[in-house]
Image (cartoon, rainbow, N blue to C red; front, top):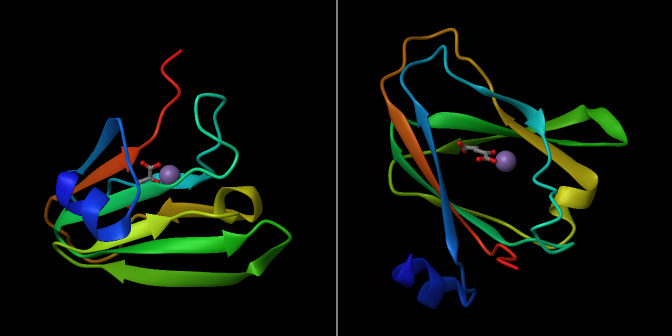
Length: 111
Ligand SMILES: O=C(O)CCC(=O)C(=O)O
Ligand SMILES: [Mn+2]
């Protein structure tokens, strides 16, 4: 977390882990919008293990979808208005996949 904080210039106080055991594990379309996050949350997502495709789609135009492969050791930064106007997911895959772990660092209101 310290390395990511120093590299990108943001600070975090919480970690949410996602474990995908194989290609059948997935996370459905969603936005990370919660009262304990700020309106424009910064989320740093470190991928470990199998490369999986991270999809993004604009709320107002579902047909324009993006797929970003996230290989081992990559860091995806979500920030600005992203959670306001875009949804993301990690879809099941039709090809066999090994384990993947995501470490998502967030700044949470602890009060
Ligand atoms: O595993 C990923 O890359 C996405 C996870 C995610 O969207 C989340 O934890 O909110
Ligand atoms: Mn998410």
